Structures are given as structure tokens and as C-alpha cells.
Length: 218
Image (cartoon, rainbow, N blue to C red; front, side):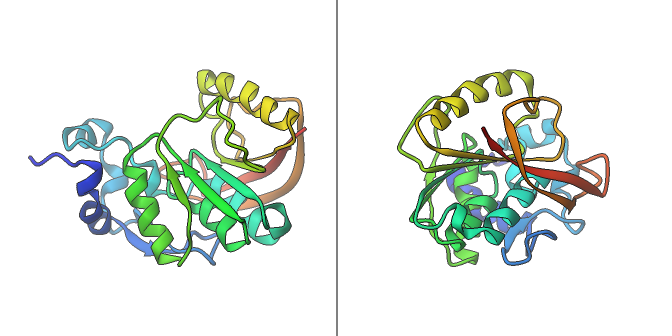
């Protein structure tokens, strides 16, 4: 069996996804797995056999959809600013920021396959963003706004994120988080900006609609 590499991933992505609009963000087109493709039904072991990490880039997660919706509805949040879309996945939030008039957008994800997926999605939306393929937790590259969709799903990851977000906030950056009620979302220090009912895939979630809040770090 031929193992995929990030450089050979383009054909795999095109063959295993369909170009469609996430239900809560119809302005954006993404290459997503759907019922016509079995990508979302494969186990991690099956994916590992072909050299593919879990394909988070193939799904429009609730936190990202809510955050992208907020940015498009409130373009002043990012207009003319340097924006980081952290844990970008498909690039949905980065694309929303670009469409909303951000001066510069960086889509960051440690999964190297995201670079190809995001490039395809940027092309489909005639949008521009830079890809950052390194772990940037703790870094500060001068971003004015950091957007983070669905990142508080793991305790150890959350423990790393919060001090970084707090440090960026202290020097003047805006940190916006889209979260559908993940277990490790901080209980304090967040202001609710908007609440959405976001349609999701039951195979991936425990419901067909997730109540998703966009928070600003205080």
C-alpha cells in the first residue's frame, strides 16, 4: 500500500472529499468528507496504515463554524489586522478572516497535511493566507487577533494554551475562542460574544446541532 506524504496528499484529498459549504457558513467552500466518502468512517489504525494522521481538516467542527460566522458577521474584529487562526484544520476560520478584510492571515496547524488541505480551500475561495506548520504555542509573532476554534478538548492541551493566551492578551492581542461546550474550556476569564446553534455531523458529535459560543479572553 502506497503511503501518503503531505506532498502527495492533493489527489487523496480531492478523491475523498467534496467541495461544499459548511451549514453555518454558506459563504465559504471547503473540501469536506461527507456521506459519499468513507473517510469519516475509517479508524485511526486504517488511516495510520496509509500514513495519514486523523483528518481533522476534512470536517467543519462546530467551534470553527461558530467562530467563522462571528468573524464574517463582525468584520471589524479582524479588518486591517494581523490574524492567527490557531489549530486551523480546514482553514475555515482563516478564510473567514481573509474575507472579512484582515491585513494578513496565518493559518497554523501541526498536521502537515493541513497545508495541502488549506491551500485547496484557499484556492476555492480566492482567499490568501500563510501556512505555519510548527507548534506555535508560546510564540508571539505580533498578531493582533488570535482565533481558536474547538481547542479545549484535551486537558493537557488546555493547560498549555491558557497561559499563552493570557500572555498574548496582556500585551494587547484579542483572543477569540469558538467552543461547543468542550470539557476543558476555562470556567473564568471569558466574555461571551455570541451564541449559535451549529449543525454538525452526528457521527463525529453527540448531537445534530451543537450550541456553540464565541468567547473573548478577558
